[in-house]
Length: 118
Image (tube, rainbow, N blue to C red; front, side, top):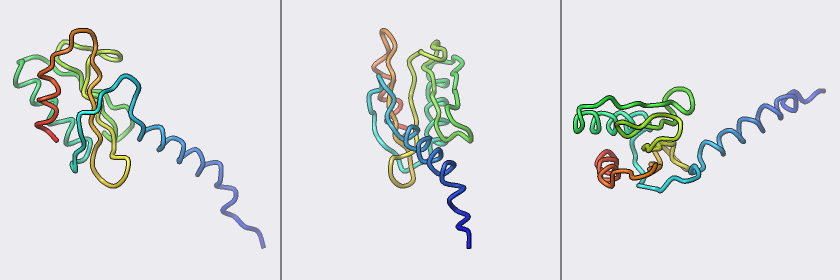
């Protein structure tokens, strides 16, 4: 009798490694807080808040598919290295981990706007 699940071991290991990397806080990012809301919901709130407040275009960038991890750039900032809200899935359970990556003289109001969406 052959044990078929062993042929899936490399795929399982790769999936676990990718999930672990996605759950880690990115380098240079200051934690703002956590939310029980899904990353997509938090990202949309931050983007709408900044767009309404500044009347400028806000760029959002999916880091992983299906809006699972999203970077929302401060108005006037551009990918890949601009100041941004960094929204990731919660490390354990549902919800989101949210941080802020500053770039140069980032607006301190940005973290307050992010916190309002948590």
